[in-house]
Amino acid sequence: MLKKRSKKQISVLLLSFAVLSGAIFLPVVYSLSDKLSETDRVNANILLVEGWLPPYALRMAFDEFEKKGYDRIITTGLTSTSDYFNEYTNGYLVFYTSGKHFKNSEISNHTIEIKAFGSLNGENSAQFNILINDSIAGNFLADKKKRNYSVNWKGRLSAIDSVSVQFLNDKVGDFGDRNLFVKEIIFDHKISIPYQLNSIYTFSEPGRTIKIKNDYISYAQLAENSFLALGIDSSLIVEIPGKKVSLNRTLTSALAFRDWLKTSDIKVKGINIVTLGTHAKRTWMTYNKIMDKKYDIGIISLPDYKSRRSGKYKVFKTLRETVGIIYYWLILLPY
Image (cartoon, rainbow, N blue to C red; front, top):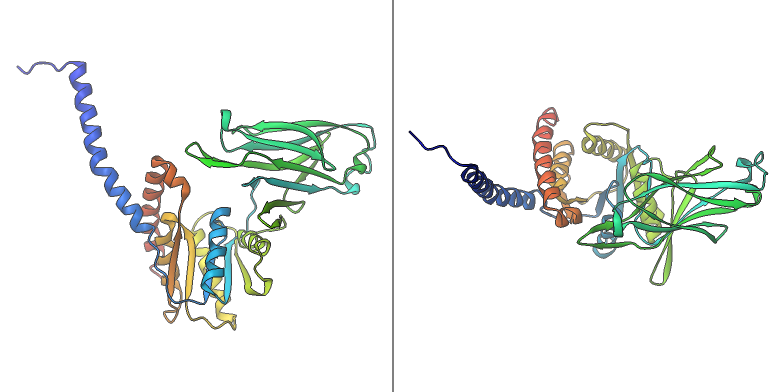
């Protein structure tokens, strides 16, 4: 009879199996990730940017446009709004209040709350000030839990010209990317002013101040606002929003661009599409499938910094995009 294996032997066998599986599986996934993230530029005069890209990627797209001499920059993205605004660098999210909100709130003591959270916890929590009329009213640390941070105001609410959320400790490192997310300001627990359509994000760069208006209703318009703030002439930008959908978002944006191009008088020599990481292959496949074959289409895959910091995230994204490519190959069959 075979001897019954001890718990220690079973543990060693399981550990050996896990190590062997990882040794085989991870190199395959990492190689696939590199394949999905390949950049393949063409000789193009149009730069198309997917508007959902994170701020650092939009900055890299701006550099691409400036250095390579494109004629136009096109921004795409679905009609959508985000509940929370991402303060991604040290700066101010400024809410300009209006007296019409406060005509019945002339008592002298008030509570002003900021609904916010940070991207990290503990010692890496986001630090911020709340300013009322440019004066600091409170200092806080925001972790990943969404909560209201409150300060008191003595005086008439109609005397408030602005309420600002000043992000103080932006940093990126092995611990992750420290950001601050702000949803709204709330006066006396009843008057709510969301950041959307009511605020400006302002921060400094060497030699200049950047101001981005939060008046967008689509990711295409959000990207356009970012490029305008960076200094691209408005006559060189075209934003093409797609309708709001929960599935097939890449396809929906691509179809919106294709339909717009059919009625445009812009002469297209070639199109380079800017996207992020492993999403590049699916984006490139989609546009090549639905667009007229006369257009030469290239792809520029910008680095996904989150994948670089987190092996688990990289594996997840690679597997997700692999499944996405198979799914898109099927839904693109009719085109």
